[in-house]
Image 1 (tube, rainbow, N blue to C red):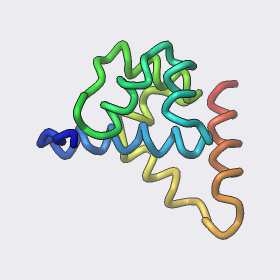
Image 2: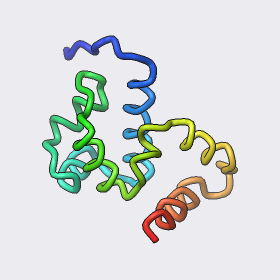
Image 3: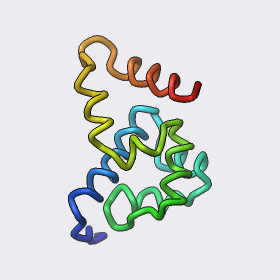
Image 4: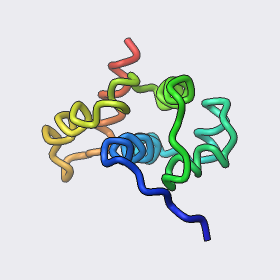
Length: 104
């Protein structure tokens, strides 16, 4: 069993943001690894808290998730986004539309 390191709460928020955006995008860890050019074991290690990504890898992950890196490193931005969403009215679709607008 892999032991989770004790992480700073801010680091844990970043890790949770990565996982949340991956799930919203409907990607597996393996798919995120392929899109970002990082090994699946690295993605899994990050999401489990065993690893913390270097800034270059954070950028690769953000690009693969098609989201500005600010949404990964500033969880409050993501929280503000999600507070405006009515989950009962197509939460995932809304998020995907929003993320697509960030691309433009």
